[in-house]
Image (cartoon, rainbow, N blue to C red; front, side):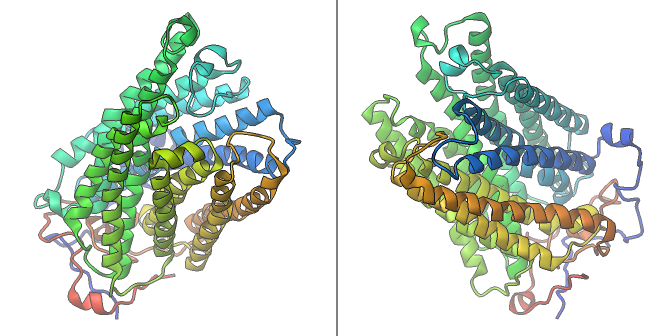
Length: 554
C-alpha cells in the first residue's frame, strides 16, 4: 500500500501550483549572482564544488597513472609532489569540507526548521564569494608553478625552503576558511532563532543536528588553522622565526596548531554526512529512529571530543610518552559516539520495512566504508602500531575510507534523496542504483589494497617504489577507473533529469519532515505561512512500519 503521510504541521500544505518556484523567479545571471535566497546559493556552491572536484579528480588520475609502474616514468619526483599536493589542497579545502554543509545544508536547513531563509542571507551570499576568491588563489598557485609541500604545508619546508607557490595556495586555504566560519555562524544563529513554533530541540531532524555540530567546529576550529597558515606566510615573506629551527623557531608548534583544527576538520566532513544517513535510514526502513536523543547528542559529543585528540598525529614527532598515552586514550574514546550512531542505525533497520532505492544503497555503502575507516582508525590510535604504519599507504587508505568513502557516500546519498526536491525532477532509479554499486566496489578496489601495501611498508608520497608493491598499485589504479565511472554517472543522469526527467511530486519517497510538505521545487519563500510543528521527528505510523510501498513516479 502507499504510505499515508501525517504532516507535522497544523495547517494545510501549500498547493503545488501556488507560489513561484525559486528556479523560475528571476532568470537572469545577475539575479543568481546577487541572490539572497539560500536555495540558489546552495546551487551556486553545487556548481563550484563540482568543478573543483573534477579538477581534484584529474590530479588523482595523474597519481594513479604514475603508480601503475614502480619506476616513476610518467611524472618526475617534483611533478609528482605537486600533483598530490594540489589533489589534497583542492579536495580537502574546496570539496570535502564544504560539500554537504554548503550544498545540502544551505538548501535544506531553513526548510527543515520551518524558516523562509537563513538568518543572515547577505552573509550567506558573501560566504560563497569568499569561497570563490579562495579557490581562485589556489588555482593561480597551480598555474604559476604548483605547490610541492603536501596539503598539510608542513614547516619548515613550506615556510622557508620550498621553491613553489606556497603563499598563494596557503592564502587560498586561508581565505576559504572565512567562508566556512560565516556558514557555521549562519547555521548556529538560524537554528537558535528561527525554528518554527513547536519545533523543540529534540524534535529537530538529525540532519539539522549534524550541521549544527559541524557549525560549532567551523566557528571554534577554523580561526586556529587560519592563524597558523598566516604565520607560515609571514615567515616565508618577512623572515619571522616561528617554525624554522635554524632561527629559533619550532616546527612541532606548527603541527600542534595545524592538527588542533585539522583533526576536528575530519568531523566537518563526516558529521553532515552522518546527518544524511540518519534521514535515509529512517525513511527507507519506515521506522522512527532508534535512540533519537543519543544520535543527536553524539553529534555534539563528536564535535567536542574532536578537539582533544590532535596529538595522535604527533606520535613520532618527539612527543613525550605520557602525552602519547593520553592522546591515544582520548582517540579511542572519540570512537564511542560514532559507534553509538552505527549501532542505533542498525537497530533502526532491525525489523524495518526496508526498501532499496538508490539513496538507501548509498547509505548501506556508507556503513561498509565508514566501519572499515573507523576500525582502522583504532590502529592509528595505538602508539606502537602507529609508529609502524605512520606515513605509509595504510594512513592514505584509512583517511580516504573516512573522508571520501564516508563523507562522499553520505553526500551522494543526500543528493539522490533530495534531488527531486531541489530540481522538481526525478532521475532514473536504475542508473542511481548502478552508480551506488560502482562507487562502493570501485572504492574498495582502489583503497583496500593500500592497507596491505602500507602494512608491508610502502611509504606514501613516493613516485617510485620497490617492485614488490606493484601488484597492490595496479589493483588500486584499476579500482580508480571503476570509481571514476561511479562518480561520473550521477553527473550525467542528474543533468539529464533537469531537462527530461519526470516531474517530481512534493513527496516522492513518502518521507517525514517539513521539506516534504512543500512543492518540488520549493517556492521562493519556502512556506506560505510558517508551520506549527505538532509531532515528534520521524513519526511513522505503526502500519507504515509493517508494510509500505513507495511510488517513485518514474
